[in-house]
Every structure is written in structure tokens, then in C-alpha cells.
Length: 270
Image (cartoon, rainbow, N blue to C red; front, side):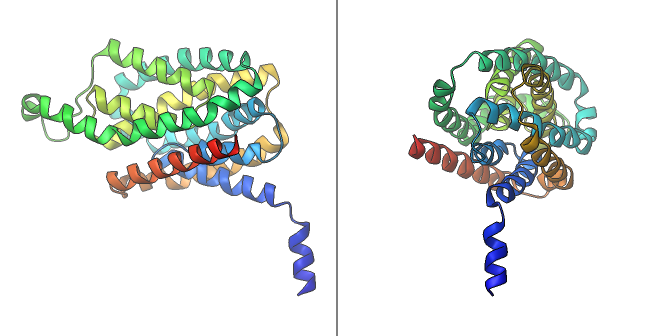
């Protein structure tokens, strides 16, 4: 018994939680978004600077998002034109957001964190009522559409809105999946699988350009990043198919609960 206790005391539980949180972040990003709500606090727990934690988190979760695109590829291909525009917006918005983050003081960034989390969670929570209200205004168009047809928004609103959300991805990113899903629902998308696919495309490219900027600027703590990267990639690949099996209200409730819980935790820590 004493040997077991000794072994447990020698384990660095911060490292254990980092790997577990990164795996769960990959799972959550695949099914609903918001995985950074888990991985970002875990990196902060490793006693690194907040902007370093955010940059390291961005690089760590990016392979998991890339594997999610592979898992969602049939849905991406069915919405290829919109995916191209979402990807372009991701590159532009993500690059600007990452550059602004690097100019933000560490203390200012930490003060913004709980507000950003709270905003993201509340926005996603409101997406259901907003979508239902918009649906009532689109009855005639839906009646003319074929079964399962996607009501794609116009190109310019899609591009502008996705660029704004992608800016947030490059700047912080936790809960950005909520914002993309809400944006797409407000603009007219109703199929949850199409929403997830387009969200993953924009998120991946926005984080991808931020990934490059953070590496060039030397903000990534690689000893933490590599462990989290492998765990997040595995989580993202093995669980993307869960999004097709979990009812939409359950997904919404799960991500809202996580978002509000992490916002409350950061408010308490300040």
C-alpha cells in the first residue's frame, strides 16, 4: 500500500490532466466545438504565460481539427462552395486575430478571458431560439426546397460574418465553434452536419494561419504542445462520428454547460 502511495505522489498530475484534457478537447471539437475550454486551462496549469498557453493550445489542437475535416469530408464536399468561402474567411480573420493577440499585454488578455468565454457560451445557448424564429420567416422557401436541401446564405454575408468569427479564433478561439454554428444557423443553415462541416473548415484554416504566426513569433511551448497535440488528434479522429448520433439539444446543453462552467471558473480565479 505504501508503495502505491509513493508511486502516486511521484506522478505529475498536471501532466496527466493536460493529456486527458487535450484528448477530451479533441472529442468535443469533433462533436460540437469548444474543446479549448478544457485544454487552455490545463495549459495554464502548467505555469506558463497566458498568451503562451493560448498559442500552445492553438498549435496543439490544430491536428485534431485537421483529422476532423477528413472525418467530415462527405459533408464538406456536399457544401464545397460555401466551404471555400469559409476557408478564405478563416485565413484572413485568423491571421489578423493572431497578430492582435501578440500585441495584447498578458494581464489584459487574462482579464478578457472570462468575458470571452461567457459571450461565446451565451451566444450558442441563444442559437436555438434564434434559429426557430428565422425558420418561421422561411417557411415558403423551405416548402419549395427538396428534402435535406441546404439553405445556403448569400456569399457576402457569409464571408463577412465568418471573417469576424475567425478573428476571434486567431485571438483566443475557446468556444469559437459555438459562434460559427450560431452564425451559420442565423444565416440560414439548418442541417447540423453541414453546420459542423463548415465550422470545422473555417476553424481549421483560421487556427492554421494562427499556428504559423505563433510558431514564427516563438510563443509555442513545445514540450507541452507535442503531448497535447497527439492526444487532441486522437480524440478528434475517433469521435467525429458521434456528432451524427447525439441529438442536437443534448449537444447544445453540453457545450453551454461547459462554456458557462469555465467562464465561472475564470471569474472566480480573478
